[in-house]
Image 1 (tube, rainbow, N blue to C red):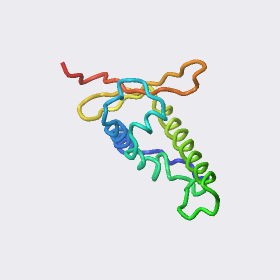
Image 2: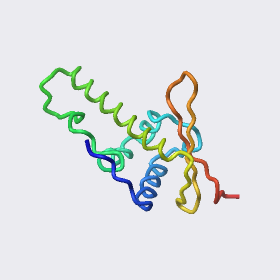
Image 3: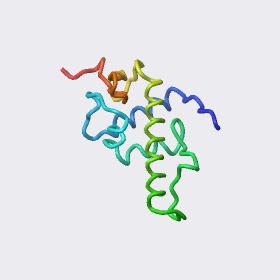
Image 4: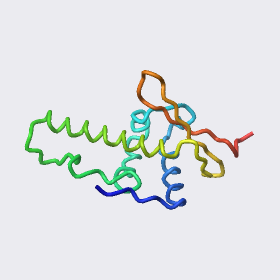
Length: 133
């Protein structure tokens, strides 16, 4: 298994900017689970899973069009891929909680909270500098 190579600061900043801009509804101020982030960002997040820092998708998870199994097996593969994407994005975000980034003239800080018994962590950004008056 390949080890994730650390990103240069400018690359990480570019990825976080893509992440912030992918949410067209601007929901980053409210806590969202990774599943909600994936649903909100829909296709905009696909690039995250094709190349580092999060991807590429392991070959065994790629659901090919020529499946020799039944529809249920194909759907199971898609669900497994969705779980992989959620766990990878969650891990990547957890590693960046509490850090600040200067993006588009503002300083953002990433936060996370986990509700007892609910399981899924929720992530959100707050603007800590550069707020509009």
